[in-house]
Image (cartoon, rainbow, N blue to C red; front, side, top):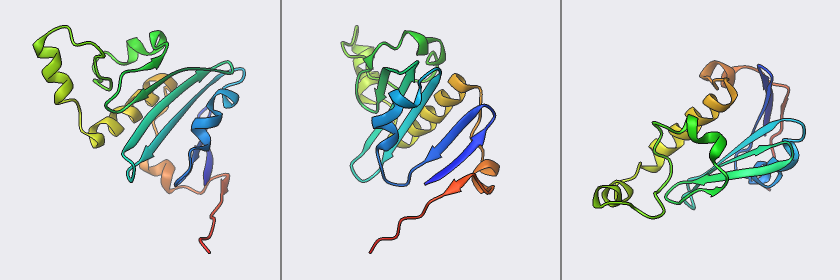
Length: 139
């Protein structure tokens, strides 16, 4: 696990765990938290957004949103990250069928996180030494 500060945000990166997703509500006490889960093995990709201790919503690749996305709507205008749960037209249905690939969805998820936080996660940040780095050996 990597832990490091970026602007006023604290970023943790877990290589293969869901702890951030299961604790995003607690992490958002008196503020905001975003958890992005990327599991290429199971093809599970989700972005969780919490504010003031409450999970507000979850966006998941190839699925409709869960929760209240009202706050995120202004950030989502040009990021087609969600399926229309009830397509209004044949054109919408075709758009759903050809939704974004998982790789493009992951890029959009990072773009959405940047829009929410105002902070860009860069290659330079990833290359720097951070507050903590925990490596768990596979025995």
